[in-house]
Amino acid sequence: MATATSTGAGTDATSPTNPAARHPEAEDDAWVIETLRRHEPATMHTQHPVVWDHAAGSRIFDRQGRSWLDWTSGILTANAGHARPEVVDAIRAQAQQGLLHAYMFPTRVRARVVRDLAQLTGFPQSVLYTTGAEAVEGALKISRRYARTRGRRAVIVSFEGAFHGRTLGAQLAGGLPAQRDWAPDRDDIFLRVPYPARGESWSPQVIEAALREAGAGPDDVACVVGELYQGSTLRRIDPESGRALREWCTRHGALLVFDEIQSGFGRTGALFAYEHIGVRPDLLLCAKGLSGSLPVSAVLVGDPRFTEDLRPGELTSTHSGNPVSLAAAEANLALFADGQLVAEAAQRGRQLAEGLAAWASQQPDGRRVVGTMGMIAGVVFTRQDGTFDPQVAREVAAKCVESGLLVCVPSTLGGAMLKIMPPVTTSEAELAEALALFRAASDAVQLT
Image (cartoon, rainbow, N blue to C red; front, side, top):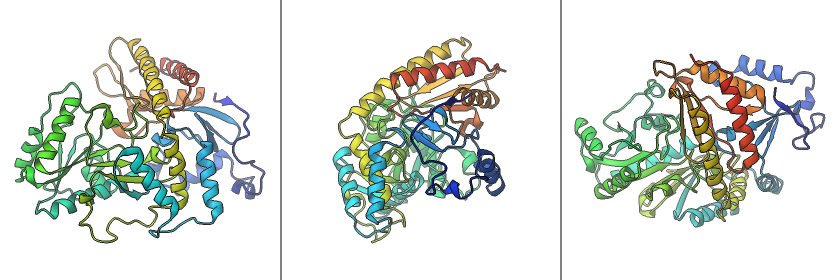
């Protein structure tokens, strides 16, 4: 069972400031699960029913004081750890200032965040949003508007297996057919081509072939958007292919857009994953680890010319630049300024990769498949015939939760993958403990 741990973190359940204190007889864990199931669609309930009460560092706690080592980071958000004191203090100070919302009116905290982003990343402009999908939509709009001003058709090129979010444009740009079968696809605008993965022969000629089939040419492309690490497939961009892609985009005047919503802010052992291949994009998409907690995302713009022809207000959003969220982002960005968190992520990433490789080698028939990049990994179990086995993934996840390790089973690959995403601040001892729990849980489940 999960570890019982006493902690001073969180709010006293009997405190009048705790909403649960108004209905103490009702809001136990069973009530939470049943109420959510009654009032939400079933599609919302994809993970093991652990009711989070509070979190600190690398651990999640329920209301009874049980704790789990966290291998989710709130889905790649709490890179610097849950409830980081600097971030909590910044949120509290901003709320106490009495400014909780400002729309697009100027605020000091917004000015500081865009300045800090420019200093940290070298991208001179930022467009702030709330979610990763919103940042994707902003990048698509910037790219298409920029292309239209030069008389192009403004085709969007993306890659098979990609996940860019759940809004319409983001899912049309994505490469997962099951996630866009509800949408009115326009193949003359959104083209998806094979991913330039490591170990695979890839050339920009695959883009040109897809364009010819759509009756278009290289000079019709507004942008090429891709992930350096595909969380849905465990594939990584090959450095040589990445350089060829950069050269192709430059030659044909298309913007190169890297979606680092999952891989940014130390997650891969570099501040951004593109640093591993030495290829700089024109637009860089950030979210999740940008604030470490609250909803903040950004499109980082490498050249102000890309946005100079946009109409006033064309990139605005009601909650972009929210002062409380940006206070969290400002404090979180400061944690990455000296590079120490990134260095820690690189060290722990090597420990994670070595531990998972040793675990996979214990099953010599290759039925344990592992893909890693820094402090993000995916594990897939296969059947004897080589097909993915979602039942084993779910059983291993349940065993992990029982033993005190929280893992995530996303919907990609039919629910057959376990995603491993510890906070980059996870200690060497905590990661060793988590790996031992994972090995024991997986060894207890029989492969089919």
